[in-house]
Length: 471
Image (cartoon, rainbow, N blue to C red; front, top):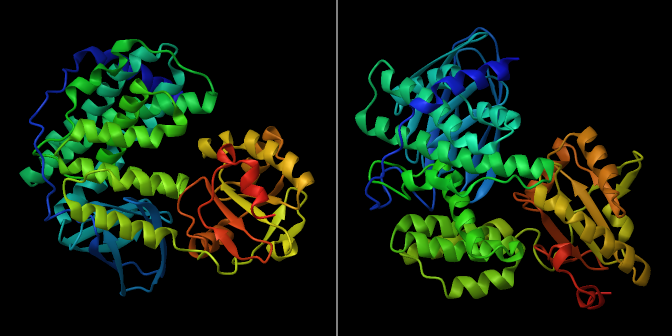
């Protein structure tokens, strides 16, 4: 009922939203707030309650994609300090209480928790005004969930861009009327953050609905007219996760217009980024993100394409190479595969060391990962053929998912290989020892339990020769 009320409310104001004005496309990275190498952001949390606080938080990075989890125990009157590398201003999200803390490279934010029920916090030091705004914003503004609720109800998806603008106008109005006054520079940056998030929603709600329904949703050619009113960059914006999500989906759309071959999608997106951004350094940022994705698909393709791709700032290519080396060096090729003990659908315990003497392919997946699930038919077919013709063992490990969802998807997909479940503790283990920060991901282990490839091909790309070479 609540979603229905929201849906009807925005219908009433949809036609009142004016188009977004296009601005100058010149942009250079704000080095005062952005560091593609990453700089330390410090967050000091003080417990002003009478109880010991047990806090869990995470920082989700998009450049490259990864996350860092913190667990803090803070007695009354005491403080704890979080230090983490930030590439640009972003949020520390707490999972144990409704709190997000905004921080940025080389900033020091002081947060004092006065009560937790209801949550009451005060901020001192850097970004205190901005953090006060975001605490109020997250309580009163329209969240992205509202976009997905409206999208789920729509019969004619061509209505969605206007409805999305209606939601965003509520948030822009909240920003404009917010008191006390905010720093003018931040206010402009926040306005553009909301605009880019709104544009991203127009891409992603459609994408998400198609992925979940497995059906193509037909929209008219003018559905994407919103692109004409949102610039690739402008002098008042700042690099943010919201901008990067918009930019990736914008480039994805451009790439698919020119070539619908999804097997070459990342390569085509890199070409589209080159074409769209030209001498704009934001193109470097986007290409860094896309090359990071490409490396996970094919190290060879990464090496071939990165060698002939220009970066506006050559230092950004060096940063990309260091990120790739750091993120994908574990488990080291030639080293012994880190062992594990997991359960299957029958609740039987399965140990990796049980398969000594067999070549082993491990496929990591999650129930929310559509590219992972698209690999299942290929994995089933590959397993049926080569598990009989050779001693190959294929193990699928579900991570970052609820056990009931794992069982449901496994049964629906009729998974034939060894199918195991990793709980949250196991998942942290795999992130640490297998550098598991992106999905899908495959590992190839030799008969001696040593790593042959820590970033193996997806099943849809495997050939008989790939198995025969190591059988």
